[in-house]
Image (cartoon, rainbow, N blue to C red; front, side, top):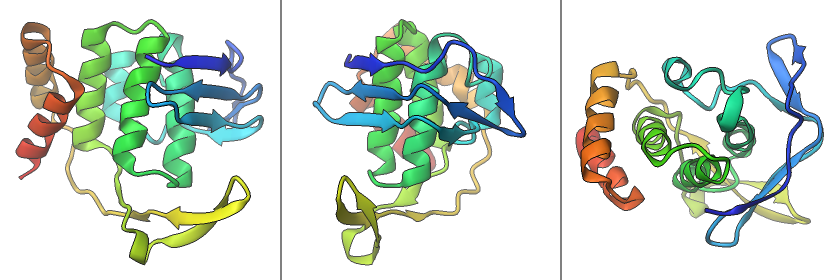
Length: 177
């Protein structure tokens, strides 16, 4: 599931519409990639569609908090493909103690309805990352509104079938077409 090295404070102080991950977070995913929300990262929960907040609570509450902060930072940077960011969110939730059914349902909803971007290297804008220039993804306008019935149906399917992450991605991709 991965490993957290630093954690954000338990309580996040509101700052206008944003929040700070004041203590910073480092998470190593199962593939060994380290995801970092540096000290002072500004996060607002916007990487998660608002409807999902009604399922899980606010993005700065409970077991979802560290995964949500990392996901916000990753979505803001666009340094990795959105699919990697969404998978990290799933694994970080599991590492934080979120149940498999809840984490998989959140992953499905985010993969299906999240704010995604293209990551074509040849068209990407370079950004500085870890001392070098890397490609940066470009936003893809998404007009798919969150469908609560579809999320509930996915939760039922996840509860009975216990699909893998790859099977969830395949289902979400098929429903997009």
